[in-house]
Length: 399
Ligand code: PMT
Image (cartoon, rainbow, N blue to C red; front, top):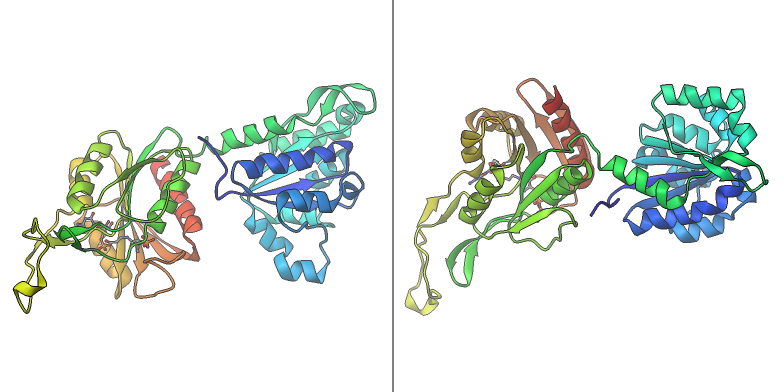
């Protein structure tokens, strides 16, 4: 099922009679998992109260460019960076003109100028105003710059006129944006991602494992899904749940992970090996619980597990293969060695000696390394890092 989970939507409401429909737009985005913030122009507040939109969105309304308090909480630049999607709905003739001319004399104009988010305009105005030459010129100018338009619809208007100028119904606006979002750069591609730790059993109650929480791998799976990919997530034991629409395969040991990955790679275009696979496993598994009364000390012989990543790169040289390097010293040098020895297209290095990133933290900071370049992604939430990694992969696959 397609949804907006982990998607930040900034709704800009301008002053037209259709402004009352913005509450429903917010409700629909939120129902599908989006975090919604609202910018209101001064005239929008004449048509619907900030209190209503605050209650529906669950976030404070943003309405002022020069308010010290508002700017210290989330200023216009932060708001512009926060948004993944900007929707101006309803957009009046005046706001359309303002956006066309890049005016930044209020919060909405400034945020739109300062943002790289995918933006949509849903116009709503009197039909004669919409058909007026200047509005049509503004419309064409914005279209030529790549702005996305939703509507307007035709029909009877609040003023009694009939023709184009009605706001497209909220359900349709939200559905259109959703299907656009999922038409992302990875649509048509199948990605297999590993996540979490593996467990190598010593006996029925004891095992060797590590501190991987699965957060990085699950974030990659979610970001890949949002970019339109078909996602297989092969996960070790973690306490996370995968979003709907992700094909989740739960395994315990490295051997089970290897088998499932090999099966998934039969129909995959991309492999991302994010799991912290145990390098060794006990050479002899004890069917019964090892009794401490039997001896004063215990020696466990370990043998090497298969290297899943190397195995995949050996078998699938037409797939795009991405490894992770969890390092504590000479991070990028060691990562580069793995890029070559495992014959990868890309390796993501992270310094796991830093407790604020890497294992079991919400954040990460990585270098994305390919034969041709090294891109530094500074410390951020794992979902943001995951999105950037997927963007780079999508670009590399295209070129
Ligand atoms: O799960 P989190 O708590 O969010 O933490 C994320 C993470 C730190 C686990 C992740 O960002 C990360 O670095 N994953 C790779 C962990 C690792 O095993 O790194 P490595 O340098 O030891 O291995 C190199 C690569 O070989 C990795 O892609 C690994 O998945 C793969 N590998 C290793 C051993 C093995 N037997 N099979 C493998 O496929």
